[in-house]
Image (tube, rainbow, N blue to C red; front, side, top):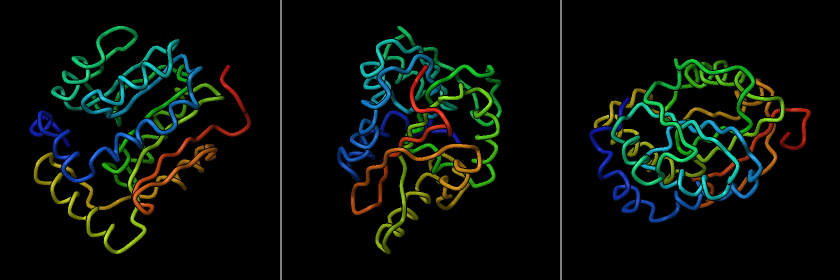
Length: 208
């Protein structure tokens, strides 16, 4: 899957369908992680969320990972190079340092993964986290029939335009729980279609 073909227009597709609702989900919980120091951002997209994250975490250095070179270019143009390293690679196969990151951010990224790929991601990312690490998740859910129809339509669109392989939402919550994370904050929007969640590795309450 690669968003290069639609990167220049992605923001306008998003606004046409959801207005600013996805932007509000991306920024909903960043005030909870102001003390983060080493951040891993997966699939940030065009940099709008990255700008907000930089402002909210003034002491953080951020690794921003995306498989789309065009999206990374847009993110760099918006957010600049200060405190951000841009990595053009696949999150499912990239090498990561051990016990480094105290925050992971995935905005509307997990919905691009199958259950098996999500498991692979957690297996790869979890050893790179410090014991107190937190994880911000913004995602879709399918609470109603109309929402399920909308989500199916989005999957068809991105399968055609970006080569998306999976055709349905996998539930990340049991996978996160199996890897030692617990939810500590959650907000929903659009009747439960969208959710913002803050997860933390078990047993530790604050950033180091």
